[in-house]
Length: 190
Image (cartoon, rainbow, N blue to C red; front, side, top):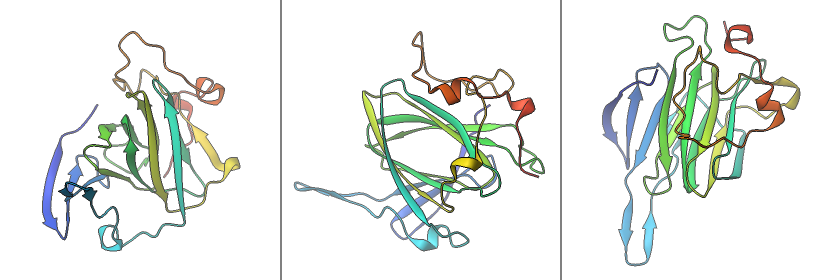
């Protein structure tokens, strides 16, 4: 089930949107354009004052690549995600058992043209589908990637019921993600 966004007041050179699932935010920067190109602020520490980032990653994926739903349990990561080339369908699944939205998800379309950043705090699983020919993502993380702490939930679990925009196309999925457990048997946050 996807949720409707609510606009927050404009601060500095960006606008923040809250989602119906507590903690999720979308930052929409003000873009300054002229005949040479554009400039925008892509991060400011005051946007997320309770978090600091220790790692920044960049990934490239081809059309129809579906990654997720990934998370770390012992060393959870918050992620600030931005598409710098292409377009993705991005999903955050609430795995906080104490949350009133536990087991629900939010999905948004992130594109290079909109320049938006999607904040997913610790306690969520994350996944995305590339809907353009290819997509380059940059994401800041609040904790280091730990391969032995990587967990995954099956991307197409009917209990979660994510409406991936696949049409009649089979996604390109890793073996790890193909063999992921169902939501009902996944380890989650308290």
